Image (cartoon, rainbow, N blue to C red; front, top):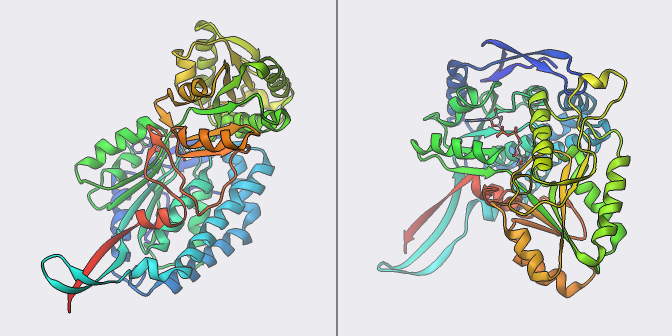
Length: 479
Ligand code: NAD
């Protein structure tokens, strides 16, 4: 898939080109056009113009729901192309793209089509008849209207899944979207533009601009006066930069940011399930999922056994996929080196695998299990975003909670216990937006998704997204 901008219903490739590199073997896959300020201006102007049409008009939910379903069907119809594009850009295992990325992208559009059509009363009117302060009798009702032009800026780790998680509800609410995908993973965004064009959405309702973030397309877009809201997923430091940039225009933001997610394994856990679940939560997509575990706290009686089993499983992993880029591989390896300097015992991994084939030109690192670090170590406090965890023992429930909560981040946690009371006692006290008990990454798309502290602002999912992407307007009629 050739990466192109999509602006006002037209594909274009202006701007200087930069190379797209395969993370699997380091070969060049093609080039990507870097959107200049003019391209971004054009996209925002096209989005603004689309808002004067019927797209976001009240009563348009059935048409928008139908359009979202056509987009979902279009993704299904080009399933293999989406899989190929996502696998090429990210190097992820094919099965992952086939079972997670692409089905979930179509599912995101269907979920918001269902929500939109199924609940018009929430989207449009909530009448409150009766007494009003100072004016006697009144009928109050609330209409929700679109925000306007929404900038969607997304990362490379789950490119299609995470961008459609924002694009679908933004469109459902009647907004026009300008999407800037990650510079590392432009292909499925371009393919989505083709699908959206074929689905017959009005020109300008959906636009794509490619390019880098700081000092480039991402910054031009998020600081643009014509943007009414920003939905961003990425690093916490980038979120802070976007917030500073957006402050001049007081642009509302929805942020899904980084994490340093804890797992709490109690001695009463089903240890087989806890080991299985922790292997998945630490090493799926080589740890490059925001929800992945990087800190594991294990109750002392089962600590040694748990570490031995987790390390054994980490050593046996195969086909887990590369880091997204040479730069990110170097960052992860720098944390492996730092952990050693800080006194870690490397129980598994810690280096670069050798395959003896073309993959040696790619950006692979070994799944790694560390122990022995103090909680103050940078490798325990900072997000690494690779296939690595640090495992430490604890003695009491309160200590486990103190360790889990002693973090600048607060995205997701897992709790492994067979004690029902403990599960319900511990889960609400973990300072994260999501707590999984005896599972990981089990998702119902209607539930609130997001983080606390440096892990984000706001919640996505179901009604939570519809709330962010629309503005409640109170209408008060004296009667
Ligand atoms: P990143 O912050 O480097 O980049 C994300 C996007 O922001 C890219 O499109 C990039 O071009 C753009 N960008 C970068 N600097 C910018 C700037 N100054 N202004 C505007 N745009 C800018 O993140 P990444 O490396 O692509 O993704 C990994 C990070 O994303 C990790 O921290 C991970 O935890 C986080 N993440 C969070 C969630 C979540 O739901 N909380 C989900 C996935 C990933």
